[in-house]
Length: 278
Ligand SMILES: [Zn+2]
Image (cartoon, rainbow, N blue to C red; front, side, top):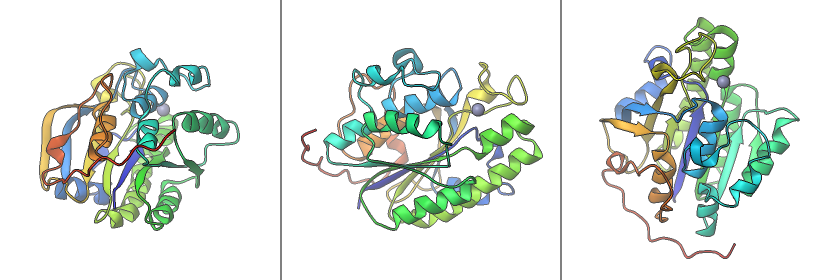
């Protein structure tokens, strides 16, 4: 089985990943591969970072900074990860927390244009969303699964990054990670965030600042290097390149990151699947 799961905890700072606040994620980082110096793109904002994760290029190229559909025509000129995977016969599914009636159609328009097969919005807390992802994993299908958990960002804006409420949200996210970590025997997990927060203003994360830029990045699962720390500088843009590389699909030349091959000590790369006509 070839399954890769990206768990994106919106606004999760690396210094919230501790044995007391997030024991499950902390344990995965100790058992598998943990990046010490991972950064998001600038601006350190959700839409810009998610668009970079989805397309392999930085905000200067994709220019999707604000939510909306103005970006749709440009999606045809770049090569989103999900569309590249779909052409190789590998589906992408997304499980996100409830987005609200206004945001869901926008999210689906962007996701489907980018080549995503399914988008499920489920739950208002990380644990509920993770439970929906868990049920999807139980169907044992190949492909990429993207799980989006907004809890930390919401608490950070309302109460400040690293506040008591923020750390409670991180613990919620960790409960979700704990549930999903039961699948690390047959799926590779990349657990990360889109940005930090509280670097300049306690309740914000957009301003240029290392505390806003710094993100956790943990890779776990079969073939992943154990008890390893990546100490070089790593970009969020390395994740899309890693995903394609891991599935054995050529990484488009315009992608700005490079695969995190050091995180996979013993990976046996599959023969690329026969392309399926679009
Ligand atoms: Zn935010």
